[in-house]
Image (cartoon, rainbow, N blue to C red):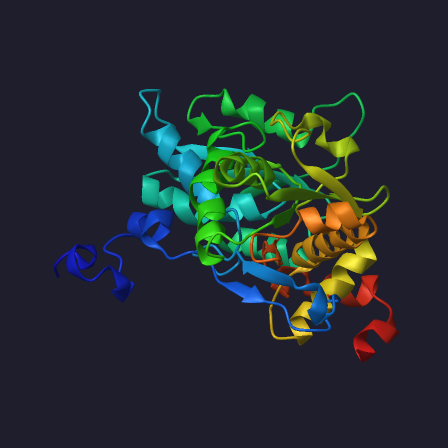
Length: 335
């Protein structure tokens, strides 16, 4: 069979697993315009809100591209070759690395994951061959990130360090942000995502700064006492080494409202998980705050007089199906 990319790249045929995982050989993830009432702004205000379905990827989550970029950079370097990747992860990066690592000639993945990891996510990591250790942060003891760094110094192990590896934000600067810019035909004015490693926000901010001074970048944080898979509170971002403080607006979002927004997305036809609802709530909160000041509100408009905003949907609800009925109220399901 001839190389399908030579003459007919649109046939969506891949001649190896490494080709299949290469973001450069895939179209951008779909961008879907939200209908009312998911978009709470009336038509006359000219606000378009798009969901960016990052979960429609080879690994079913947004960690696909940074995992590929970090693996490619590490294994194309002149450093010693490892047999196994070790990473601290809330689950999706460990899964993305596990699915891709063998295509790069590695034997698999070990991971330090949160002790409260959803049951289905643990089962999926097990199916993917991830050797994971459940961790609880204890003051004075190494965190999961530190444990992964330590194990990464041992022979045969490679710690990519998603919380500090420049390949993480570079992947989003290379693929995510330009893809959205092209899909909106240069009309984008607001970009929003949850903050976990902060790689998505930092990479997008860096790319958008070179594309348009109009684009506002919004990062969603867990409110104190809240927990949403894959994202962190401001206090827990102290371990992150990326420059996430500058050029990014910060909005806090709570657990229940994230799951409630996810449920609304699902019942509208988009299989978007709790971190997706989290980002949607944060984006709408940011826009509603900006609307209180007419000058700020008008500054969000593009040359056509529209506010064009997008939020990232990082994964699906499938991994958290056991959480919705315990977190939400019975009334929430009567939407």
